[in-house]
Every structure is written in structure tokens, then in C-alpha cells.
Image (cartoon, rainbow, N blue to C red; front, side, top):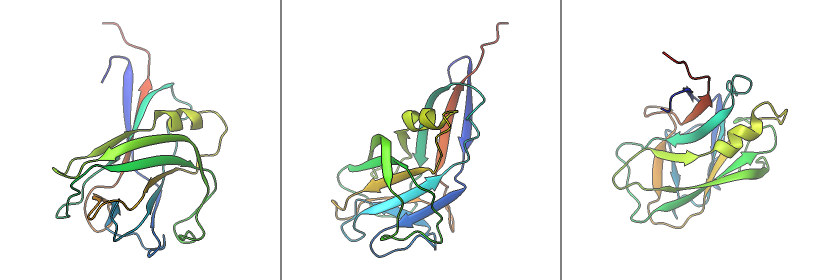
Length: 176
């Protein structure tokens, strides 16, 4: 961590997994992106913006942790991360009744062989919601169905690690 920085790691206060065959109400233990069997998949995440007024944001990353014992994609799976523009709840969100998505937008590539933590730069999203008065409805991770197996990550339900938002704040450096 650079001198004069503070690191905060946040866990989601709300989460839902959506696909054509799944509603958001019951959170599965994992989410698979890019699998032809699953189809297009969305992971909706909302984090409490505890960084909003404390200090300028240097950088921020969305961390998705691999789910143990799952198949691996032979190729990279492209993921898109969008800002959620409307209020939502896991209990009321479905594939047909999902919130609108908008900018800022980020891209990432999931590599599931070997299984490693996926780290996607979401600095623009975090900066856009810091002290701007813009509502923070969260992030949506989206992937189209383009691989036989896809890349699978834990949701934290029933084991595995929960997705995290890692935020680095610029603080005043202390001289010795």
C-alpha cells in the first residue's frame, strides 16, 4: 500500500444472482459467468459507501473469489461491471424485473485455471458515488454465455468467501 493511503475492505449489504433460470430471492453458493448452460448471468452487489466523506479515493477494486471444486473455463471469460441506476432488493428482483444499468463501466477477465481471485478496477464507480450526492444502488457484474464451463466464484452463501470491495483512500502522510 502506498504511503499516505488507507485500505478499506467492504462486504456487500445486498446481493442477488440473476439468470433466465434463477430469481434473486435465494442466493446460491456460487455464481458462474460465461457458461452456456447458465446463459447470461448478473451478479448484483450493493456496498455501504463508508468511504464517501472520509478522504479522496485513490483506487478501488471489486474482488470475486473462486469457488472450490468447480470446473474451469479453458479461455478467459470477459466480465462487464456497470453501475446500478435504480433501487433493488434481492427479494423483488427477477430476470424480467431487474434494475437499469449505466455508466461508469469497467471490464475484467476471469481466469479460472488455476482458480485465483478476480480483481476488477472499479475506481471510477467509487469516485462517482463519493460525496457527489448520486445515489449508490450498487454494481452489476455481467457476462454473456460464451464458454462450455465458464468461471465460477463464491457468493459466501453456504461457504466460500463473499465478494469484496477494496477501497484505497488518500490520507495525509505522516512524517517521522
